[in-house]
Image (cartoon, rainbow, N blue to C red; front, side, top):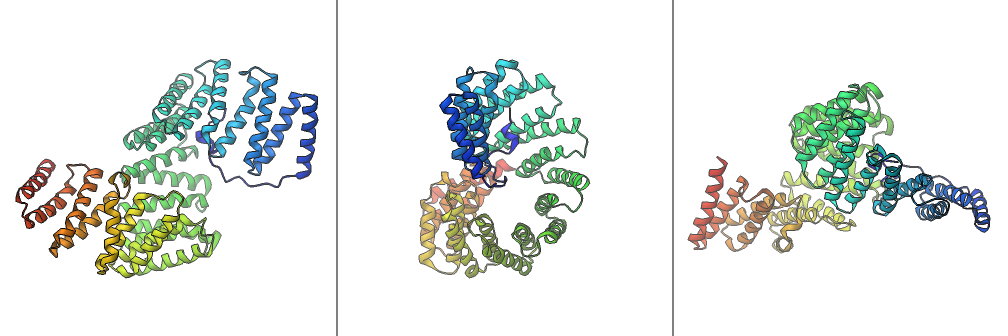
Length: 500
């Protein structure tokens, strides 16, 4: 049975489209018609499988699905419902649905496969563990996380009992559990499972085995989420060392690892090391693609971000201009994610320098682009609108700033997740400026929104609530609500006392 968590079948578009041999297609269909007329089920099943494989190689999934089901129907006329002879065709149908990115449709076929293997080998065989793993992946796709968790733990127990705890398949089971915890944002548990997996593979594999990379990369990703930059750096360098030894120091596969290291060094404010890492990757990319290829753009963007952090704004601006020119020369639809990132970096570059007239141009372009996305991310749209509010406000464009403010105030807090804290900071800054101008009426709802967002995403006792609460107490005092102001100040003081 194929383990779809590690096979790369889900939405796999890396396969090359092949030319269908129309003459062969016609010949196979004629033979199939004859076999149907003769009621030769074995031949119907085999010919249908061959036709399905040809259509699948050309990404004609509908035709592939049609012929695989014809094949299954023929086999089911030949064998019992749980006969081992059905394994191959059931695997093929399941694989098709996973490759199409529609794992839920594979569920009945995966269930039957798992049942067949349990019948053949017993319920504690590693093949049954693969079946449980695939069914867990299907449950995840339907947001049935508890069900998926039980299946993955069941698969892990089977593998530990059948193969021993120090086994590569056991390590893969631990990674599957780590991925599930990532999906439900339990980063501590995800990190725990990933560390267990790494401990297993480090015990059984040579320290330069390419297989280690899969487990190290997972661990690095989770360490970064948990802001453990030193540990992430250690494992990223291990990945780099393995790739340099096993693949060679100038292979393209090294570039993503250099990018990861650059991001880690940047987070550690080791900007010189970050720049060195990115420039090494760029040199390797330029050797293959030249200096104006789309493959270089992610590295230009990362380097531009690092230079901006060093306040080297002119060089950062030039890199972003070069990136934008490359992207705009290509397929804009295919390059939407890169364009989004470039526009965001450009807007932030000018915003940081308080060049609001220029940053506004890019925030508007970014808003327009994001609104065209099929699944527009509400909180990301809110962040852009908050930036536009800030630009308009500091340029004294009162009508526009009021429009963006109204849109933000009408947005329910529960839809703003990723960018909620950033939006809160922008609103807090604008509200404070209004307080200085003694425009308390306009400042109060803006500040309240900032407090609501920080409370939701940081917690009711977070120290970053202290300053907004103090600002709110100023508004309350200035508008003759002394008792409310005293209560707010007491809340702020309690947070400080608890923190100390």
